[in-house]
Image (cartoon, rainbow, N blue to C red; front, side, top):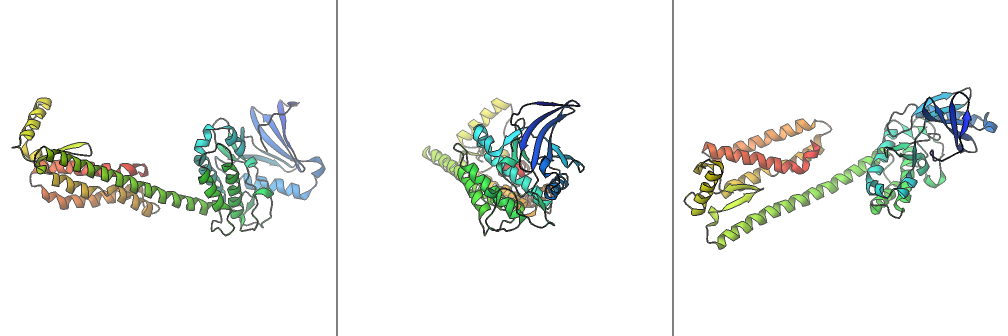
Length: 396
């Protein structure tokens, strides 16, 4: 059912406007405007007015739908038992498959929409509710905000009810494996059809999730387990990417350090007395008797008006010690975040790790007896910790 189809306008008394939306075998759906707000009114067809199955279905839809409070689920307003009439929110949008077939730009964000849809179904399953009719026609994407809305709970079941097979045959699993799996399987069939849209992005990603959802022997019995499976998979991929990124950065730093040493060696300057770079911060090595060192001090004096002292210099060995002791802060923070974030706050994890690295600093600070050198070393140590944490700051 597409709620935005064009129909002939019919004037109704009491300043109401009505559009016929759906004329089915058992139910009639109309779009009605009351007090400047459009609503969907669902009523039983005249010839089925006394059909107890239809009456119970409409009543059950309202009972289940009105209990759900989620921005991605249609809102139910009222149910008139005397007239067997249900009133719910009108969604100004288009169906899932139509949306992606006609919005090429949005195809780039298909992962975002799939994750949002899974979260909506996950909300249902957490609250013991199962839609039992997940399909393109029952998933609308709003025109104004591009927000997903799940509609039509006419076949919905709750965990304490007896399973009755309903919904659309194309989306039904061959073998019953629980109400939760019924929704997961239907989601898989929907994603399978989505992946067949000609210009859709991430086809392989959609097909992999679809295959996982539709496996008859799948351990994924509901959307809660599906969400956990995908989160675990993404986390593993992210760790691999972080490892590769860290390895590339480390190799780049080592290569830069090696090339700098090689260049200075060709100039016949002792490699223990060169100017090198560490994460874009210049580190001047300790030997004020060298001509280039004196030249640097003089240039700095003319530029800043300050005279550098011999004690302000750190050696290459100093910087290596600082880097090696501080570089693991970020990876350790991510590891502890995933291990303890359900039991402890992010702030507690971060504070505990800072305390650990403060103890590490106390151990290595004996390398510098001069107070100014130690202060400079501490500043570089703290900077390296922040540099190490940069790829993981989104967890904070």
